[in-house]
Image 1: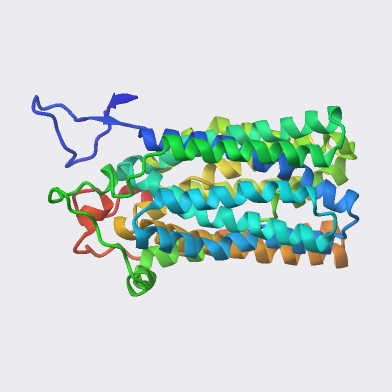
Image 2: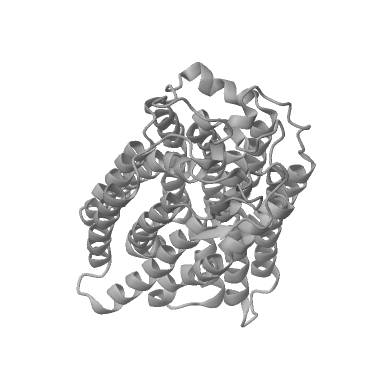
Length: 445
């Protein structure tokens, strides 16, 4: 897909005839990784779609027990993200670290067939999330490094749209397997394992092995045969001195502390509507369908008007969904409205945040910077899962959700006020940000 960049910023490169250079708006690396994520998400979402019901209705866990397990499901990947990001930058092979992560997750899927109590299930989920933590930052770094800075939002939007196609197909597959196959949950886990292996094969065959900076870091020509050296821990720790990165990490953490997990949101919807159990796996489809339709437009909008603005607007939409669950529980349209708002929330946040980070962090530390912000957000969501599960158990669903909504409003205001000063030009800013100037792209605001 080669298109003329009609909105090229000032200072953009021009062709010999004076026109804009024809640039690949979506790099082949982005499309290949999107295909891997699509297949892997079919596998993961098959499990995720049935897991809340399997644990609560099948294994008899309390909301507090489920909150703890859901926290493990999200928190372990957060802790491992830093390791995955730093390793990828250190060895300068993002594909290798991402492949190890995808492989570990695939290996854990069949182990769910053997786990039938809280302890073993928790261990398997922790290992599976370890794989996700290892692969997330290297994968996003590959996307960022292969894309010009001014198109990062669109590139991440395309990847997230393909990823969400898998999230759309996974629950559908789980629904049909639960209703047609002998063995119920075990059949879902078995098929999920086979699909996960296919994702690893596609990664190995079709994702380029190069880990060096692509167009996003093409501010200066490199000597022939020159390869960037791996980074050490001191260089990685120095990232925390970047004011804009600290602001992004803090904003993501504050809002993550008030983001009720998808599983709890779907359990609340079922509680409000009395949805039969066999329809429960279809609830994520509403979120995924809206996310799929709007991920690319939301990413392009963020590139144009500012990623911070779109990111905060997404949390405002999530807050509206909380309000509907609290104050309109008897509306017949409640499930549809909440799922639409939930999908809009993901479209406005999931790809926009890494796009903002990618335009802020030097190319040689891209995976580490993405891991710092991703870990901040994921650890905060881990805390939210534990707190929400405990609040639901002690106070009930409505007070717990009301507390989350109130805190979300406060966090959104804090995120709006949190505005770092203008970035100071760095010695390698032109090279690492891909802008050709000492300023960061407009979309990082």
